[in-house]
Amino acid sequence: MLEFSGVSKRFAEGTLALADVNFAMAPGEFVSIVGPSGSGKTTLLHVAAGLQRPTGGTVRLHTDKVGYVFQDPALLPWRTVQGNVELLLELRGLPRQERRRCAAEAIELVGLADFARHRPRTLSGGMRMRVSLARSLTLDPELFLLDEPFGALDEMTRQRLGVELSRLFGTRRFGAVLVTHSVTEAVFLGSRVLVMSERPGRIIGDYRVPFDHPRSPDILFAADFTALAREIAACLAA
Amino acid sequence: MPGRLKWGPPLLVLAVVVAIWYAVTYMLLAPDRRFLLPPPHAIVRVAFLDRANLTELLNALLLSASIAAIGLGIALAVGMTAAIAMSQARWIERSLYPYLVVLQTIPVLALVPLFGFWFGFGLASRVLVCVLVALFPIVANTLFGLRSVATVHHELFTLHRAGRWTRLVKLQLPAALPAIFTGLRISAGMSVIGAIVGDFFFKQGEPGIGILIDVYRQRLQAEQLFAAVILSSLLGVVVFWFFGFVGHRVTAAWHESALEPVGRDSA
Image (cartoon, rainbow over all chains, first blue to last red; front, top):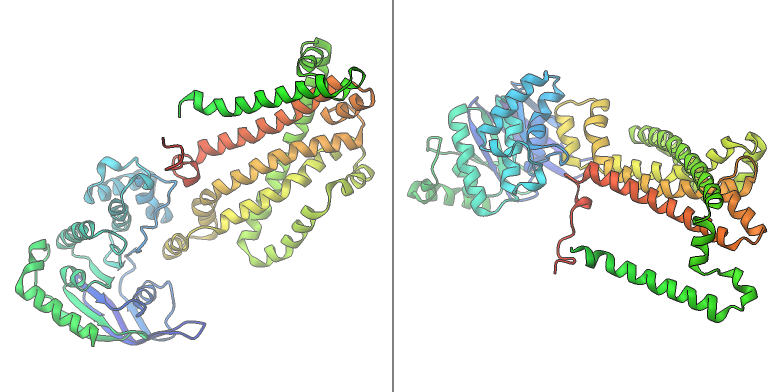
């Protein structure tokens, strides 16, 4: 689905953000990438999405149905929830009827049907994030790139959205790359966790997560969950 | 906020100003010098209650307002086109912007005689003065608005391969609306001033409010002179308020500037 071989990225001003990044993910795999801030996680996603070009190595992406969720929900404030969710289909030139239908479906899926006519500023942070997710869902992506989507939210909302994302993943089985600096979040959502080093970012750990999706918050207290999280945190600190 | 609280303070200030006005007229000025500051009731009686005088003033006001409106319309079309062109390529911005700044800094009175030379002393020149003074705020604000789109929104559009036109129409122009209205509001006020200044300078053709001001001054018709000044400032206020109102209607549903400030006057 997505393959990085020997990828590096140096910015124009000379900073080396990524150095020799290698990994391959299978379709339907949920890969969490955890690393300290400034380790090049967002750059990695930008390179995967084609927003930035690598300066070395190759990136192979085997689908063009990619959904990108930014840390900022990136909603257009002058559009309603419905209008925002329709945006990507509009950019692809889909007829209005079809746009309406797809958007309504996606809004329903993230539980915001009652808020379709609202503008973003009247929604909470968590709701805005769900609108952003719904917008990506309209493209029926085979790969989701998630750039710390819950980073700006409070702990409770984070957890609730995590559970919802796991439920969505359980039913739809898209591939996903989630970038986060929270080890707990990485383990809770990922079917696999990659650990990145400090800058320049390299992959220094690769862990399988042996729990099925959809996951319940109860697993946060399971012994094998905490043991794995501890192991990953140790790798991150090393 | 209750109506009494909203209107009370400005009305109180008005009352104080009128009181001082009367005091100056009747206590400081000798009767033979009262034409320098006629009392408010005399202005109302002579200028606003006398049908002939009022008609003269209102016709002039209408003419000046139409000139200002035509000038503003042209400035809006030219200004937004220029700003959009500049937002599309740095080289266009680098080529045009310095001259716009020069245009803005040349005292308009220095250009007015030239316009008279070139285009005669009629409607065209008067409109041109309005365009000239109204252009810069529209260009500067529109360009600022088009440029202040959040990076993450641009990334979203890039990611989904939006072309220039789509990006302009679906992202940049809507995002720039609040700034465009700010520019429009300033320019509308400037355009009214431009209409009066042009009028005042050219002193030819059908009289606008500027010509009347000059005529009343020469004839020492103080009441009418004051009425003309009051009406021209009222026109400016109405125009400023009108575009503020329209801008608010357009952006109120989503833009921060249209929201009630929190924590102010909350008692």
